[in-house]
Length: 204
Image (cartoon, rainbow, N blue to C red):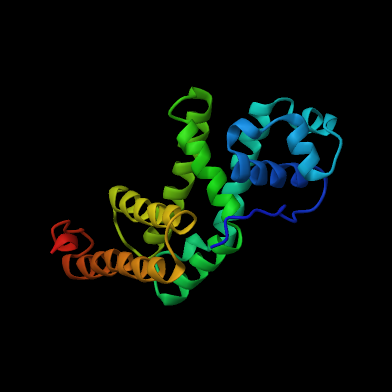
């Protein structure tokens, strides 16, 4: 994957500013987020930042929500219970096409270690992702109790981090498909035990 960054083409006004934040953070980290840097990237007047968001904190919070929704739509995470090769391909294609979305979120996650205000944003971000996985599994009749959803998402989260940093799509694709065995084991366990997940089966 190329490490170069280009401005994400997401319309004008408010969306352009949100896309600009994602792009600035992907290139320069959170320390690069200023009113002028974001406005310049969006090709708008910097006064529009305060007009739409009030502050840098408000801008980052709105960008987190925006990046989450973009990621959910692009990766089709609600299809995670299928966990077939088509899902693996669509996930990797989506992240490879817009790596800035993931890089922004990872930067925010790291910043949450230092900034309590960012931590609350990150907690909501993870709750949204894990909730999406949980809902998808529940629709398949799988009773995970939350822990399996966390484990599955954590595995994918780590793989996507590697995809946008040190690894290649072929290697990651194979790993994503292997993670899918968790869902297969969960489905088999539920079918044979009347809806009670036997955690020992997933590690055998």
